[in-house]
Image (tube, rainbow, N blue to C red; front, side, top):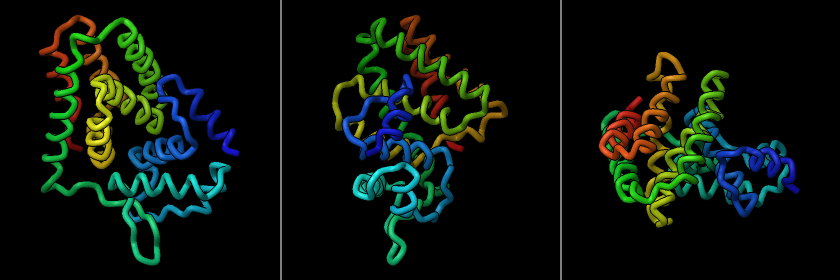
Length: 215
């Protein structure tokens, strides 16, 4: 059960290997939510998702619960889980600033520990990101975008930091609409990578902050 889903998700080079079907489902549905493949207020039906992914309703229910705790889904009476509203204009700058603070903290913390294995991962991620941009594959772009930033946060080595960061980045959504050309999203990540590779922490932090913007 779930073999097709496992194969689809685990063949991606830049996606983390999860231990349970629930974790894979949570990651996959989160990616689609961030990519805007569901409308605000749209109901996520367990039966439909179960049939779509070829798994029982149990892990679907668990994935929906996990995303509800993150705040991207909300529970409505008689409707179950629906897609929540994105942060409004009043709090959106705060959400952006919180994400910048977390990721800047992470980058400053890990900068001296970044090694050739880390650079190899980030380079591979950027190669996939570039292909996704050229194909205008928004879902894949979201996957590569989140994988790049999550890698930096996870390298700190404290799961609590990831737990704080994840709902923020998920609720913020990724503002590709601000780019006149999708490849610009890749170029922003490339600038971060080049600064990291050159050992230039000041510029790495500068480009990181510039990459995290409001829609």
